[in-house]
Amino acid sequence: MAPCPEQTVSSADDLEVAADQAIVACGGDAREAVKALLIALDFLEVEAAELRAAVSKGYSRGRHAALGQRKEIE
Image 1 (cartoon, rainbow, N blue to C red):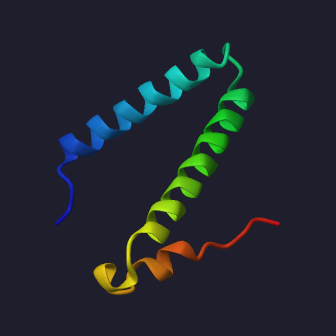
Image 2 (image 1 turned 30 degrees about the vertical axis):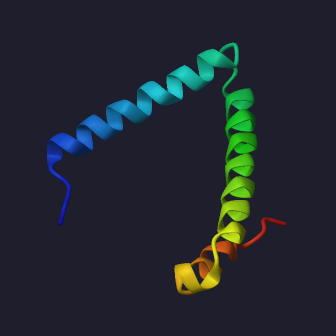
């Protein structure tokens, strides 16, 4: 099902507002905002991996194994 044009515009507007808020939170420095967001993303990935490990393989029917594998940036 394709998203409605109204939803796409709203999502784009929300993304712009969120980006502006992140930059303002970092004193107007876009580079610092990107670094902060990368740190937050890394934290969330670690937390998601811990949660996947806590879920039994039988309960999840092995679906989490593929999600846990991620290409590392070198």
